[in-house]
Image (cartoon, rainbow, N blue to C red; front, side, top):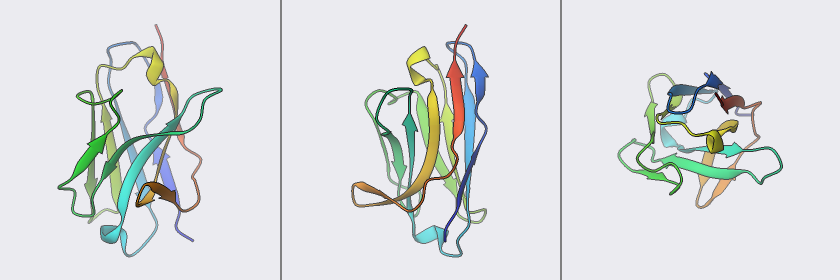
Length: 118
């Protein structure tokens, strides 16, 4: 079973930055479209960003466009999320997972908590 292990979360002030990482335990990572999702307390999980197998094509939710950047290193089986100009509404648990079509595919990891607060 493929595992997704997120890291890099923490507490940051509004306007600050964080960089998340996600390691994926598979030998065919370069064939996966990958995505970052988040879930805030009391809200449904939402997709934040996706990246194609090669990394050439990326897509973002309107709420994070221009502030977040998704990237990947296929040699390291790792996907990243650089988050800048953070806002309190970005507070959530962040998850990475494989994406197939418009849906997440696989078992969710434990996620990493991001808290934006002064």
